Image (cartoon, rainbow, N blue to C red; front, side, top):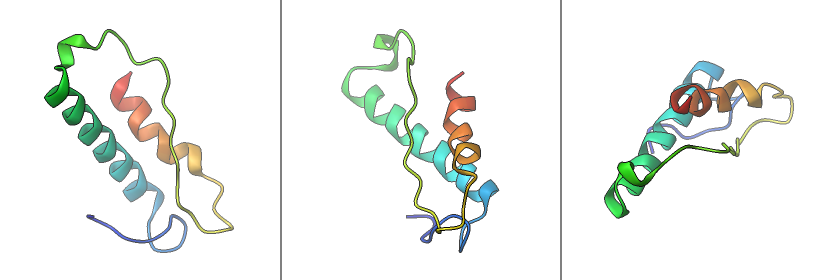
Length: 71
């Protein structure tokens, strides 16, 4: 793992954004290894789970990382 910690505590929004993009790239690499990216017609939905502190309310900004990558 490149970073350990929860958003809003040890991990910044910008770092979370970048890490979420990295997770998405890892997922695409797995799809590519199994069936090839040419088999993917479109991405219909992006779902993200964010580990964060109790006071953190900017989860959507972190999940924008994968959304922007895939759009």
